[in-house]
Length: 149
Image (cartoon, rainbow, N blue to C red):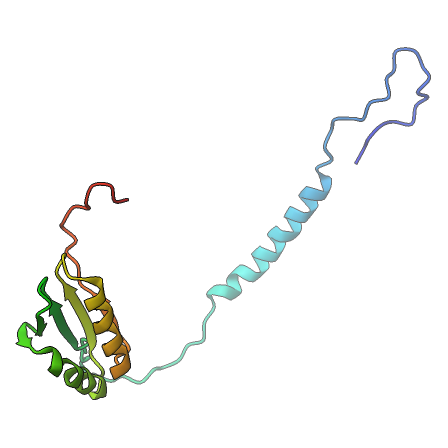
């Protein structure tokens, strides 16, 4: 990089300021080397090995995950797959669902006015029973309450 010249700085009318020119030669050298590397390696990336694969016909069995819907209304009543159940029977049903293979997903649907304590107890019961997959079901078409982000 050039910062100045070798001329006598004591001459009249000359100032000792660095040159404002950028030396682009190293940049061009690096770019040319990269271009050559890409030209050489590009054909190797598209080259593949020809293999005769065996042919087989089968229909894929789409296996949808089993789900269990547990609904809680504002009064605290429970519904297992839309069938009313007692709170005393919930633990037995959760254990039976956890032991089944494949294990179902628990979809928890709660009324807007359901107490959080009720939901926390149900989630703790499901975790203690051994259910690994649990989620909340919401209504995406309902507008957010005022003041919510």
